[in-house]
Length: 147
Image (cartoon, rainbow, N blue to C red; front, top):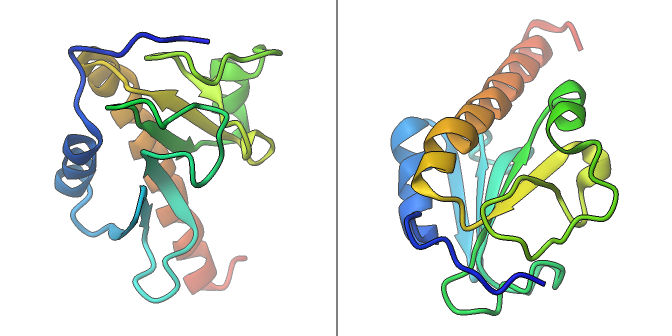
């Protein structure tokens, strides 16, 4: 189990703000311990990213530690396999490391606890952009009647 905390990264509130600024049309629902980002202001589903900062959703990441939070991103099958598909026994408490989501890995969700500034910039934001774009494309297909 990892005890470290990424000292140079944003906290969960700053991470929410980064997503809000980069994707201003995203629907954001915040509840106790979590923020959920979608394109649907009525159903608030599906999400392209979530941020959780307590153990109410699952206990795998031990988010009860002060200052800990987890960013979760829904990626495509290819990205999931390329980034985390080979991890057979992930330490879901590891800091600043891409991992299969502890619950939703089968749906191609990845997670990262307390990403550093560099990881947010170089990895997390591009993955969120990809997840957002995938959802926009899927939504447009549905509107156009292709799905």
